[in-house]
Length: 123
Image 1 (cartoon, one colour):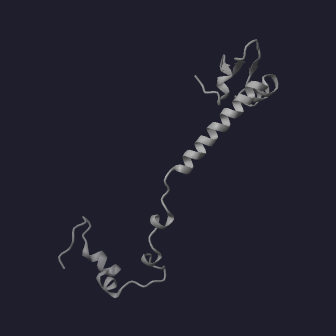
Image 2 (cartoon, rainbow, N blue to C red):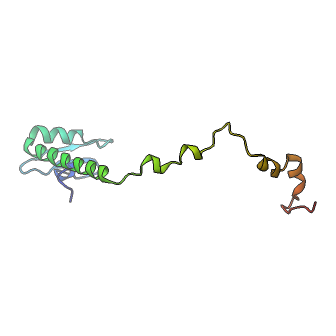
Image 3 (cartoon, rainbow, N blue to C red):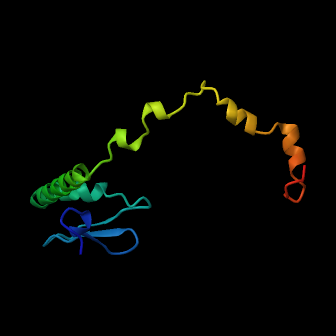
């Protein structure tokens, strides 16, 4: 069963798009159409059953506050811990050390170091 912060606590679907009000002595039935919008449900509840609409609004506010409180109370990873220190991140203009450049083969060497099968050549 739906909670009182849901439209379906006050209404029930009869057929694919037909909806009926569950309030006592209310015979209101509407076709929601293709979109199945809840706007007509809200309008009916607020104009014909203002006491039920007030209950709905209070329940909805409590639910929203509870969700907001839960989101705020979750532990958050601080931005500083989530990222490396600025000193550890090399700048785009930083040059590679000479030792790395010496170890890295030139393109012409790279083509001759490996066979077509992916095996390293004996040079």
